Length: 158
Image (cartoon, rainbow, N blue to C red; front, top):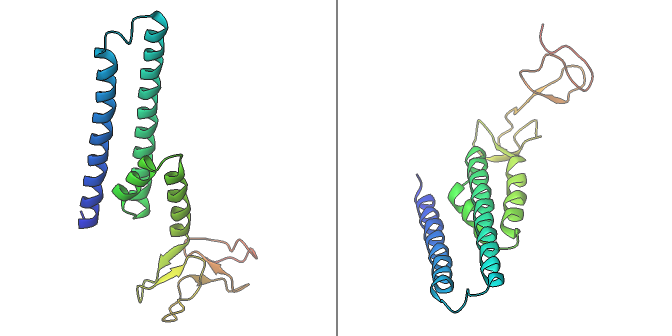
């Protein structure tokens, strides 16, 4: 695990502990204040508030797990992105993650020089290495595992 991943993991769990302690403290103040929950309406409001709080925790947990798995697959720092997605309010963190993720998918590295290139490039602009095979019929980039060119229907393998 990289050092930055450890830092973000610590920040994430620190924030989770702080938020949980604040919620538990506020709940304890309400529950142990005997004069606060005397009427049935107050008790019902408290139950509804607790259900909404548990539902919010569940949604945030699901978001955290999904972002963690996806960021790991994408080769991104999962702890940083879980922290941003879960703790930046009003779904702005999730929007930021999705925008950055879509930009990351459009890039790849040249297998020869290691520089970052766009995924639709046929040649590396840095070293000139062929990144993709070209169709002999139309000279468009094709994948090496394809049997037929999707642009001109030329047979690629025989």
